[in-house]
Length: 217
Image (tube, rainbow, N blue to C red; front, top):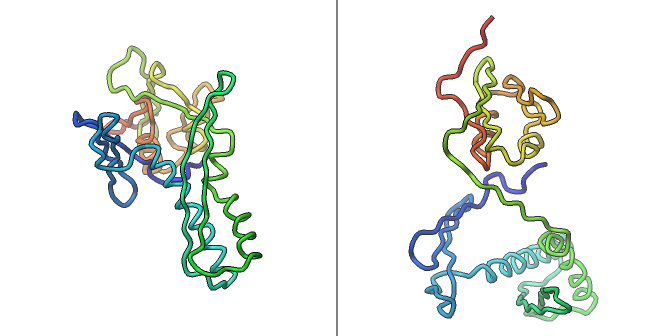
């Protein structure tokens, strides 16, 4: 498993209703709720952010194809909205995406771009089988700690906190292998890579000792 983003999107919220600060790799944006739901509308709401992702991906996908073909299409517009309805007790979400060409484009090019935009990466995600996994970070002591001492670093594992060991295994298999009883090999990668992976632990189950322990002969 390899995450799409090198650094995750990270959000925080304080006491101001309902302003969130969303940090991404190159800055921060503000998200909020509309006034009618108790917010101050100081930034896009979650539905708007979702639709913005689809809109941006649609535009970029078409532009890449246009540039590759060398077509003279200077500007395109995309609008997106959604509605939800419950039928037979099941909630269904429908997203409408409208394409507008700001200049004269022949019908064959329009039809081709209509096919291309359906395959933009965000469309593929929204129309695929999506799973949302939720992990809780805990920072505290636990009765059981297991130390895996290596030549450069010592990894401390708190099994009572661990929620998904496969996450580490898929990202750094040379160090983590959940199929083995002694599942952490602290010499399986460079110290920097191990420290970097441990920092990604979503549950607080993994830590690095401040002063690495050396293996005893």
